[in-house]
Amino acid sequence: MVAAVLTQNTNWSNVERAIGNLKEKGLLEPNKLYSLKNTRLARLIKPSGYYNLKAKRLKNLLSLFIRRYQGQMGRMALVEAKVLRQELLTVSGIGPETADSILLYGLGKPVFVVDAYTKRILSRHGIIEEGMDYDGVQRLFMLGLRKDAKLFNEYHALLVRLGKDFCLKGKPRCLTCPLKLK
Image (cartoon, rainbow, N blue to C red; front, side):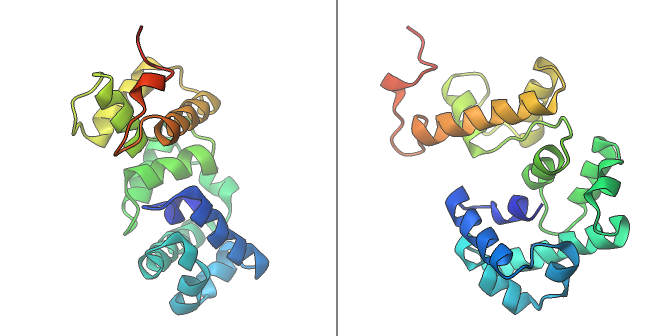
């Protein structure tokens, strides 16, 4: 759940450094994180960027997690994905991609995560209109694939890899793209 918030608008290597800071201090536990002053939490997660904002967002999420689920993922996992998603979306700073990342990666719920890579790849291949909204793109995957968390996880990871290695924002490598039609 921490990684889902820290990943907002940054790359994974920066998130790993921020999480490493929390682990090094023995703070990667809900109650310990929640009891930190925002300024200290912000300093620890600084490598992830937007650290003051992300510290607030983490505290908002932790408040729900501790209050409603006593800081236990097992309790949270008992809630149906659709209900839990709506609850997560009420937390300030948690949008659809972050909520779905928590559901898929944190709780193993079969929910497809849509990110900028996914939209860019589908748009460039003419599968979606540029600017299609998150829910519309997600619906394509949710209706077109078997509802399976492992499948969604792998599919999303492959799209991220394709986006990072070939379908770059500024200089796409279309000629070497593994999805290139011959």
